Image 1 (cartoon, one colour):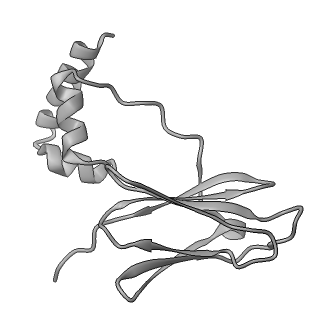
Image 2: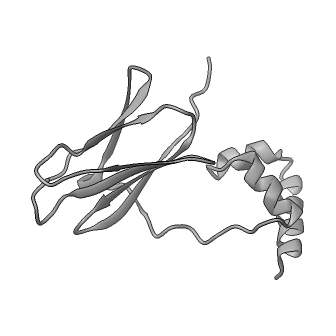
Length: 137
């Protein structure tokens, strides 16, 4: 299937579900600009990263402190087995913090809406956690 047909298919399926580009984007943790780009045939969805969802041994905790996300993982931090980095990916920005053995498995990121947090363990690989936009009451 070529790019134009892929875009037409995405648009048709979205409209069939009575969704806006923005609603589909939020469901997929993307920006509405990305959905528009796909539907116009200016790009295609890539295969997802091989990141596993967080699990019991790699539980990612997110708190809001002083207007920032404070991200931590209860994990050993030895030279042989540690969290090497944490990254926060939004629709148009990537924040990357390198972590060091025998340090804390924690980082701060700007609180800028929805995105995906990635945590890389030197033994077990890449893990992810989605951050959704907070709903106003």
